[in-house]
Every structure is written in structure tokens, then in C-alpha cells.
Image 1 (cartoon, rainbow, N blue to C red):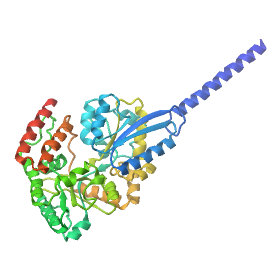
Image 2 (image 1 turned 90 degrees about the vertical axis):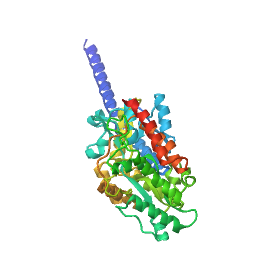
Image 3 (image 1 turned 45 degrees about the vertical axis):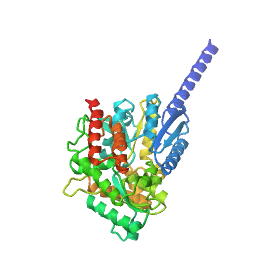
Image 4 (image 1 turned 180 degrees about the horizontal axis):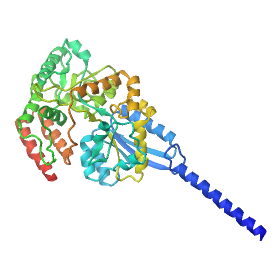
Length: 439
């Protein structure tokens, strides 16, 4: 009996020891830090320039090195084709775990149930936003649910080459200039820079029109998202006429000069000194376009409307969201937290997507920023002085409307195929039909 008792005591102690070790290993595997636990596979998709791709890939590699149980497969492309690719993956229930999201698409993707609410991961600490001010967080919320984390604040801008202004002996635009000033300066640049070089790359697109509407105290959509937010089509007519005037006078580059860029900042005609101004630009694009140009370029606020309201706002440059399709939502949230808070990661990213939202990261990068980075930080501060509150995210159907605007308003205006009056009339009818579906 004595020997049997000793035998069973030894067996019990062995089981307890094995159980404790298994429990320790389980905790280690679920810590989310530098663990060797169960392997996690994530997919991440984003758009951008080659410079952005290179930076993001380095951060992914660094994260995987620090977290050897995590594998992140990258998928990336330029802006053109990105949303078509996303739509295809969404239709197949196969969105990547981590998706780069844009403010104008947020309502649409949330409305379709494609994005996960990140609040639970903020509450359990997987997504650390303790060093982020509410003003940087709120843009990713709808109905108090957090669907997207801002990965860089930016502002609408124009891009200009001061050296080309100097060569043409034309004064550089200063804050407070008007739409008429823009037309005059563009004409002088075209006249003085020689054949094949133009003052401005025009933009008759929806972003410019939104800015123009804000200066008139209006917005593209009504509060309910069921119709257009302006009643007088003369607003769109006047906006389009600015581009028509510059194209007809030779102040603006014709479409064969700038349409080939296809939304790729590395192919803008300003890079090859074919234009001195780009009228539709975002501050976070400066680092990539300067790298492509190999020379300094500068940012300036958009034209002002004499006697009008402030048109600018500080915009979430891009977001990172977690797909509702993801089976590893918490692990995806941990990577977004790293992207947001890691100083080492953000030294690689170098604010290329915009001004970082975490205070300690923002202050660190501003001190160490490249010349392009410093100009971007300074521009966002300048734009803030000419800004008012941001409008709500665009409603469902807005992507269809933006495609409509590009294909049946902007492009025909560039090629002289339609009058501003007819373009405004067509846009109202077709846009109203699209938005009526939200009623």
C-alpha cells in the first residue's frame, strides 16, 4: 500500500506540472507580443506610390521580426484600380484582414457591413489609442462605432515649383489669393516658360468642386445623403468655367499632357517641368512626389473666394480598417496599434501618409523630419488656419457619383466635348437618381 500511495502521488504531481507548463505556454502564445505561439496569418492591402510600398513593406518585415508568430502578406497597387479590386474581393467575401480605407468610402463600406467595429479592441488594449487626441479619432467613427484608424492627417493643397515661378519672373502665390489670381498667374507662367510648358495642371474634378462649394457655405450632399446639397447649378457652371477659361487661353495644360498620369503622383507633369502648378493635391503626397522629381517642391492652400467662407478642412489622409471577413480581427488591430504608436515604425514611414496621430510619434518625427516632411507638417498647420469643421463622410452611392463626375463632367470639360451648363444639368439629374436610392 505504501508503495502504491507513493506511485499515485508521483503521477498526480507529474500531471500538475505538465498542466502548469501547458498553461504558461498558452498564455505566452496569446500575449500578442514577441511570442512563439500559434501562427497567425494576415493579409494587408493598400494603395500608393512605389515610395509608400517600400516603406510599408519594411514596417511589415519589422513587425514580423518582432512577432515571429505573425505572417503578413502584402497586397498593393496604385490608386487606379484599387477600389475595383476591393469591390471584387468584398463580393467574394475575401477582403484582406487589414485594409487601407479612405474617408469618402467609409460610409459605403460600413453600410455594407464590410468593416469591423474596433471599439472592443480599444477597450481590451489590443488597439492602443491612449496617446491620440479625439480630433484625430472621430473621423473614423460612425454612430459612435470606430471603424477606421486615421494613419495620417492631411489637407487639400496645390503643388507648385517655386524655381519655375522664378524662371518665369512671376511672383509665387501667397495665402489669400483668389480664383482670378490663379488664372492670371497661370497665364503669366505659360506665356513666359516657353512652348510645351504650361502654368497649371487643371482640375475640374469633384474634390475641387467640394472645396468651391464649401467656400459658398454648401456641400455636395444634403444632410440625409438622399440628394445634392446645393440647389443652384450656377455654382457648378462657374466652377467648370474656370478650367474652360484656362484651357482656352493656354494657361492650363491640355489633357494629353496630364491624363497619362492616371492618378499616379510619380507621373505628374510637374515632375518633368511641364507644368508649374498642380491644382488638385494632398499634403501627404509631397514626400513621394519630391522623391520622384528629385528637387524641392512646395505646397500652398487652395484659392479663396472673395467674401466667401473658409473651404479647407483637416482630413484623415488614409485609414486602416479591419475587415469584417477577418478571422483574426484582434491580431489585425494589434498591427494597426503598432503602425500608430511605434516610433521605430514611423521613422520608416516618415509621415508619407500624412501627419501621425499619436502625440509622441508626431513630436518625434517633426524634430527629425526631412525637408519635405517639415514642409508637410508646416502646411497642415497653415491649412488649419484656413479651415473649418469637416463635413460628414460621404453617403452610400458617393463612389458611383464620383465616377459619374469624372467620366461625364471633368473629362468632357477637359476635351471640350461639353459646355459647363450641359455638364451641370446632366450631373444633377444622374446624381439625384443615384442618391434617391438612399431614401
